[in-house]
View 1 (cartoon, rainbow, N blue to C red):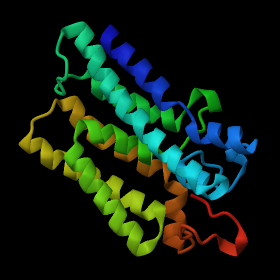
View 2: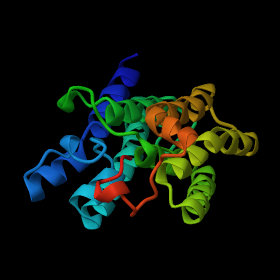
View 3: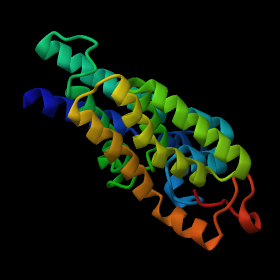
Length: 217
């Protein structure tokens, strides 16, 4: 149990680093949670703090997801001597903990981002082919609609099917199958407000704030 507890703690702490919040605070002396949608993710940071900070936030949020899974692998190697073994459970635990850390960071009173970039980082290590296919779906939907939330929801909804399909080709542990469902489910759940706006036809397009105001993300 110690190995899984350690993986969970490391994964959560990595995932909980609020890069978007830190960058806006550092460069603009503002609290991103009081701007735009109030979200600390890359989309809101790009709108309120500039696209450069948004891109940096996106990259680092993705990176922390990948590092969490790699940390889980390393922890597994320390305990079991199975370096690089993706069939172990520790990286799965670390990955799920990372997305929970991003969405519910203890440093910000458990009010975090929506987990899209961090989820992508997790899956780029765990099942990179499925992750790239999901990213392709995201880009296609975004380029057609210019709606980040819709693209994110489509990619998240398709991710379990893509991962499970590839799992039939490359067997993975049962815990990983749980991860393929739990992580996208968390991302979708965090988009509940976006889903309501999409259904109402009021979800804004990226780069086109409504009435001159920063659009929610």
